[in-house]
Image (cartoon, rainbow, N blue to C red; front, side, top):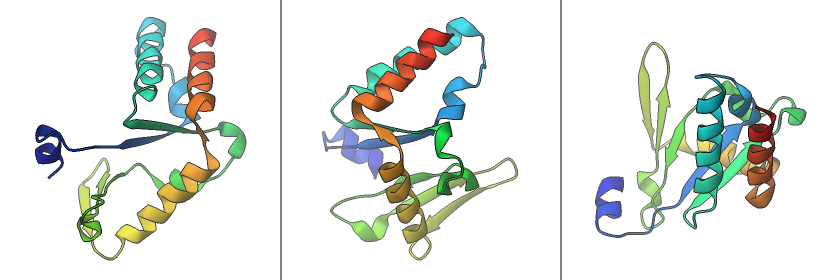
Length: 129
């Protein structure tokens, strides 16, 4: 459904919620890290992308249970889907259970840094490398 909407020119909004720790984890070497952080900051400036960073100073938060992707369609809320990837298997959640992930996203979005604050943190981390 998502591919069809993008292909048809439909509006797509991406909300990327990242833990600050992943921005600081030095994988690939300094040049790769700087390039990736620059890309994240640039993408965060796009109208259809919202970047939220959960600062390490926050301590524990509901996102620590693991990574997931929530896909929602404003014109069909019943089709919301959660993709959960793990080292052993992947899960797709429809219907009941999706609301838990929607609540996690809402809470993380309210707790995290967004907008220019998120981009400023990404640039700060980039300059430290």
